[in-house]
Image (cartoon, rainbow over all chains, first blue to last red; front, side):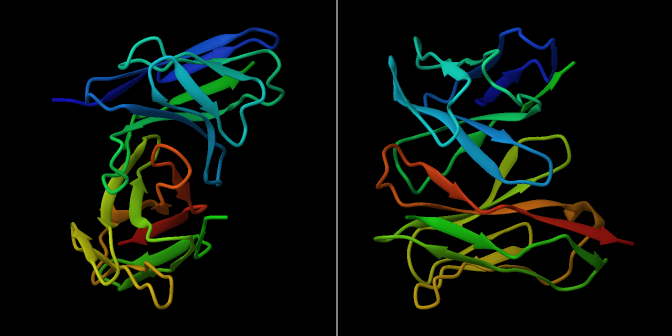
Length: 113
Length: 114
């Protein structure tokens, strides 16, 4: 079955370290997205990509970086510049048809220790 | 700009009670509307959707009708179960801002007690 896979499910990082979250999809979706979710809050868009080798900043891109070298993959790096990185991170993908909606991964919970 | 306003939670109901979670939106053009559900520790799952005015989306006993005149997409279920306990997100996609970016509400936590 097709789907979107995020790994790892739990991740611990020391302050000052960069860390990369993986997101892979086999749905043949063109667009991919990264969201951040804090406890009791909604989703905030970090970055999105509509096509390979192209991506755009979302609402809270500072302290994050992404790449889109392959259609299937959209890794997110949380850099040491991100002042409050502890959160639940969700990756999603979609077709370009706006009526279809998104498919989400199961998320990565990042904790800074 | 585009936005979604959801009923604030948390909502606590007894099993078999009727559920309504209100959602209103602001958008240009003719957006598609969605309800997503998030179970504890998991990602979001698409629950239902509607793509044009007067459409009714339905799934697993949940329903929502796209009301253009009131710019609303309220989620309803006639008889909730303990297994419906989750966070529910209303969302819209207007297709105007590149790709088909979704605008999410803040989510409503539902707890159903036996």
